[in-house]
Length: 164
Image (cartoon, rainbow, N blue to C red; front, side, top):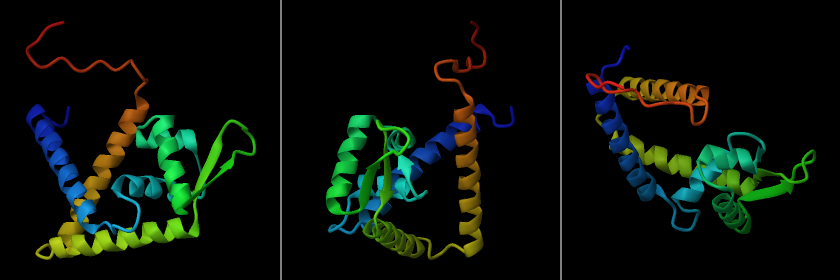
């Protein structure tokens, strides 16, 4: 194993700290007239492709169908998202951004980027790029690893020094 226990624990701690701080950045950069931070996350995921099935979106967000339905209904009412029946599966829906939804995502990204640029004023572009690359590698590794596991079959490793 390339990463030892202490390093793995430190990485978990730092990722959790980063998540908390990013929530603060998101709150500070949010336009109070637009969708809140939870709905912005939904909009960003929808905008990653031209259309997405509701079930796939719920899976990516890690929420159930009922929670997603509430989010989508709210975004439809706000004019940011449209939903249409899937042409091949009458039980499913395809969801996509409206032009207003695309603008909202782009505007939010500009606000967050500007705030992050201010916060990282003492960083070089190289430092920021290296951090971005490390985060991208970590994210991709976790994404690939978790999807390679069969649900319900992974057993947590036994800590060193313990027996079955």
